[in-house]
Image 1 (cartoon, rainbow, N blue to C red):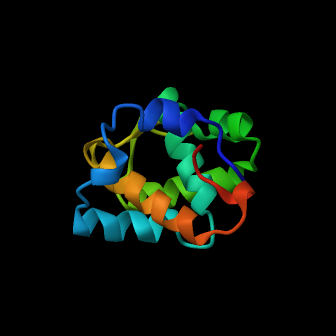
Image 2: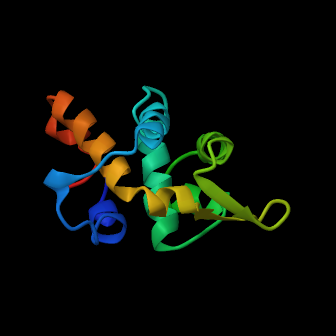
Length: 129
């Protein structure tokens, strides 16, 4: 499922030169495992894109991304377990924000996404424009 141009416009807009990205090995491994695994890879990246634009709770994410609540909940748990999102609040209405790991390693995340896209043959499987 292709993403909106949200990721490119919001998350990656300040990356100066995509061709000369310096990749952090540890973060490359982490991002690869979270965002390139078969189950939920697009959903997790879509969640990161959405909460970068506007932090929100699980129900709001479910409505915005047009996905089942349980799917969002599972993906949030994966992101939280890997310290890629931060939860504020206690309970049902918890608001999620991207963690500092995301913002401080955007070039590495971009590199991981582009590497995966280069292996995909189908244009509809692109993460970002």
